[in-house]
Length: 283
Length: 167
Image 1 (cartoon, rainbow over the protein chains, first blue to last red):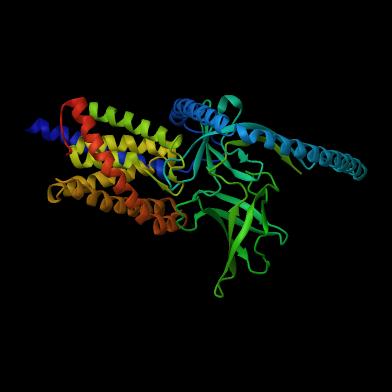
Image 2: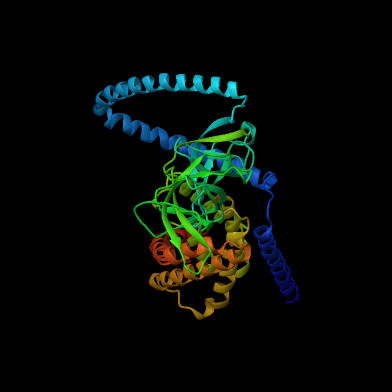
């Protein structure tokens, strides 16, 4: 009887310690410049391999089905794409000329290159299994030079930042996650604010996670559809990356500040490839 | 120990499925929470020690896969197990329908606990909208999911350990 109550006491104490440990982990704030803990790395290295394998299998199956069913449309698509390439080549020539002119003018004015980025392409191999948080996993990790806090972008705009790193995979905190905070600027007014992730309303058929910019001074006139870019002042993201556009503005007569809702430029749930900005220089 | 490792393995497999092939199914804003149903199954049919330690293990795995805070789901699952095991003798869970009712009630209770934990980390504003808009639909989704997963887990345990817990 006594030994049974003793084992119960030990179990209860260890459970209490586990609960305290959970609360401690929950409360502790990991500094931005610190890398993930060893157990997180080990876990991600292991889980990343399975996720990457599952994604490869899935891509191959989908690719085979696509190749079989959509072969008919390939000829027409090929013709359209050739036309697009032709148009883009013409545009490219124009941009090259503009770039050359820009370089000459910069040299004349003694200015340095404004932005210089070093990037790395990564494949999205998984998303968060819970709807509360917005995280995704990419197939690039510590061995590829990825570090905690590195910005993640897509061809459309900002995606988020690296949150946990493993050996060959990393977890990205998306900009729509409720715990994400990004210093942004609204163009062309120049209004600055802190953008936080938010769920707008329940929509079954599509993802409708937005971000909200809080504490914008009322003196700034913000228009619907205005572009939102990173300010670069938080030290995490380079300046001028497109984030999204303003979809709603909320003003309260009693408040000295206003709030704007932002729809992200990139469709975060359907991304297949992203770019990790491993180094940058803002002037 | 066998229950602990079996459910940890099952939880990892379910998470891998959810993060890869089922990542947008049925919708990005509504998910099938297999692991949550596993936690409730443990609370319904296993004693306090087995269910609590296994639930904490499953919580830590969920945290690593889907939460920016380590310990978020571990605390939430543990609190739900404590609550469930205190009242287990007083609630009726003999039929599948009564189990589904309690899955719904406990899913709502879990949302409340999540909100309290968010208060702790000072980010309650971000989750408030989520709870307001998603609590009821996600609860219904969990209940529907439990209709299949609870009997499946029961059968699995019967096959593995020759013990039948669920009808």
